[in-house]
Length: 156
Image (spheres, rainbow, N blue to C red):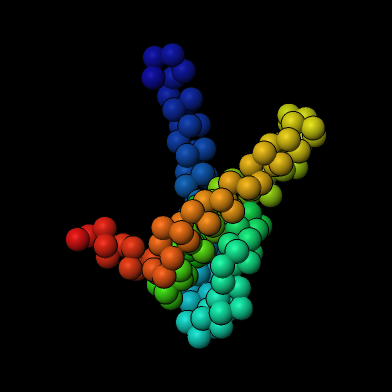
């Protein structure tokens, strides 16, 4: 209060209120999308999809889907939780989360413009196998377990 005065404090509170309002709108929108996904993505559809795309193919697809999935953690964590509630294999969930956090293709234009196109390309190429290797490692360790099985074992 002594340095900037009460005007500066009020200006900071205004910006904080705007940020809180923007974040709350994103949270409401994300929960609406997740609610729709609960209805549209049934356990039967997921089992059918996983029957076709199990193993390495499932790991590749879920890692790429994670990288292409839009939004921040307030959107993709509830989505991942809804998949986990439907009996998703643990290795598919791991590949999805690692793909989202490592690939996140939506940040490539920002990296290209702020850093350098060559450095951004090198970063993408270096990190490309990490979600796949992690998914394969999780498949090896937790082969026939769903997320619920792994969490239940942790509680014991």
